[in-house]
Amino acid sequence: MPLNRRKFLKKSAATGAGVAIAGAAAAPAAEAAEAKGAARHVKRHSLTVMGTTDLHGHVFNWDYFKDAEYSDKAGNAMGLARISTLVEQVREEKGRCNTLLLDAGDTIQGTPLTYYYAKVDPITAKGGPVHPMAQAMNAIGYDAAALGNHEFNYGIETLRKFEDQLDFPLLGANAVDAKTLRPAFPPYYVKKVHVPGAPPVKVAVLGLTNPGIAIWDKAYVQGKLKFEGLEEQAAKWVPRLKALGADVVVVSAHSGTSGTSSYGDQVPYVENAAVNVARQVPGIDAILVGHAHLEIPELKVTNDRTGKTVVLSEPLCYAERLTLFDIELVFSKGRWTVESVSASLRDSKTVADDPKITKLLEDEHAKVVAYVNQVVGRATDTLTTVDARYKDAPIIDLITKVQEDVVKAALAGTEYAALPVVAQASPFSRTSQIPAGDVTIRDLSSLYVYDNTLVAKLMTGAQLRAYLEYSAEYYVQTAAGTAVDVEKLTNAGGRPDYNYDYVSGFAYDIDVAQAAGSRIKNLTYNGAALDDTQQFVLAVNNYRANGGGAFPYVATAKELWSESTEIRTRIAEWVTAKGVLNPKDFASVDWKLTREGTPVF
Image (cartoon, rainbow, N blue to C red):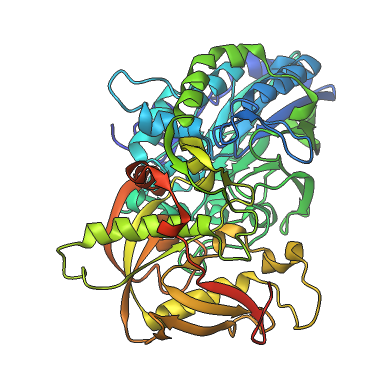
């Protein structure tokens, strides 16, 4: 099916663009007469827009990696089964007809549950299953959802199949067909909220997704889809929604509030642009924020042009929170006007699972639990990521070793076969552990939580030196002789753990007493000082290869090879083939933190 022919995407003769409309036609004569009578009286109405974001495949309050109920230090609970309970409570309180339920994206990637139905028992197979997230969200009764960047991780075919299985539209006004530049997904959705004795309130929901998709999932979208800036597309579509008679405009944006980007200048658009949209584009009443995995109960932003307040809210990821936008309207002089908007959060830990959802998906859940508990090998030692962000940890060496072996095999017999292969890997988790004894798929999955795939890039010694120097910016500058607090040593400038890389094959020191940009010391390869002109093959994940994290040189480096098999799967294959997971087969201490030549640890 062509990209622009979807069940929620209709052709608009007026605009030549795709729009999604639910009851947005002109009011009939009876409605106009009713409005005339109502205009003599000031009438008020309240409605509530609920929102989730960054669900990442969490249906149950279950940790597939620990094979146990989910728990954290804050006592949080997660999952759509809890959200369903909260939503039903709100509908009872506010009146079902006075509510909408939205999502701001990142739905079908993030847990073994979503992986299983993308790769093991894929929804794209002939006669394949209905995606668990589609089943749950349909049952709860979502009205619309924005596309997240992780929706594209399994390719467009999987995304389109998921879209077909939904009873509501997936919105993405700034996701356009690369050739026609027309919307590839419904840009918006309009719902009438009926009010006794007055015309209905028309609520328009504009969906915006993340421009970084062009980088992060380049292999899937290049030449097929383009992703425009959120600010520009909001400025294009909000006036159209107003022209259609929208009384309330809500934006569901898979974009954070910080105004920053993690991909440098590779895309001319801001990654976390929600606040920019609120400031720059008149006519928006509320923005449901996603992508950043933050908890923002209420953020008020003043629009630069109108001086009006726009209310933003971001519920915590994984269905741990539900946002409520409470909107007060007044009907006067023949039209509805938004009088006030307030936002608040409801907490999933305060309620129980909705048995409707747990019963609906108990079979799918059981299949995935059995799958992740398959034993694939035996470990001689316990391996952990607890201190991997500041010490060279064997468990990260396992990742780089697997990546090296896969790329070496792939390049065998090619003109690049003689080049040395080095590999990058990041300490994704601070709690992952592979215990001594039986090793299961869930043990290995907890080590590599993302569905990244492997790419081989051609780089020079000088480029890799710069790559390591950039990576070392992750550390907070710490003077020699001062006490070292490991909880304050990392994440300088807010850089996340997944944007700190080891690079195998080299030996080097990171002097954290020095300023960023001058920290890599004693860099050697094969016992000799690194030759800046020597060529290497870097085995790198697709996120980094496409520019994720804005590491220097790698995005523009020549690509020698790539594949679609997840690195997580390659790790499981490697362990299965070995049978025994022994650190002597992959671990070495290649780097350490120092201060003016003295090791920190």
